[in-house]
Length: 315
Image 1 (cartoon, rainbow, N blue to C red):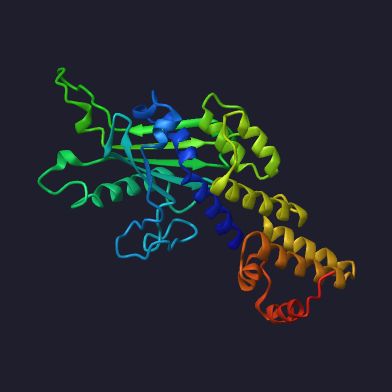
Image 2: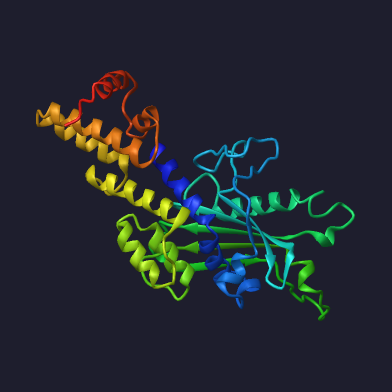
């Protein structure tokens, strides 16, 4: 589970990048469709780790997003409109979802997140006497490993006015307060630039240089914090591949160790594990305990490897 948390953190940090956010907003939110990427970036105010419940410590996050006691938003953004940058007009929540699984459906969770974003506005954006001041909330869910029949699809859910009898109309600003968007990434080219950008960033089989070249097609050049996050993801993906697995670090480690034991290559297995520990510590800036946890090293073996690391026994 440790490796999943690490990858989730990289995705979360990427979704907080203003340039990536601007492309997502331009493609999917009507309010920004006619604005340039530069104009949209000026409207964005990332909020960092914001708990769903105000008594929580910022930054504490349950890895499966199912525990209402500890979950925080992956990426929460306050956004103004291009023609009125002095006033927050929208609160956008973006969530990176690896697969469509969990105890609750994505749409049910999105509704809850939107509801929390409305209730948290009390005394900050509106009081109980001024409900017209409620700021619109949007929850965007990005599914990286979507089922084949949903890949390259985007679904929108929002409140609309229906005339059951007669044709009495109300202004949209009074009822268009919540919206849900689900982006199902795929492997094919999309007509939406943001879908292509996210697909490239999420591709674990693509190295850093290839990603950089592919993103240049959309006038995106990896630099600064974005470059750091993408490179860390690629380094982590390379490590997983070297351990001989396409389905995750844990399975790769187990298979590699088991092969070493069966073939009698105990020395090779030990050195491989030591190299893996040091690689994670260097590339992902993990402590030695965190690195061993990520590698699923049994508790009764940790002291043994710690002693070897102290003696620099790595070939």
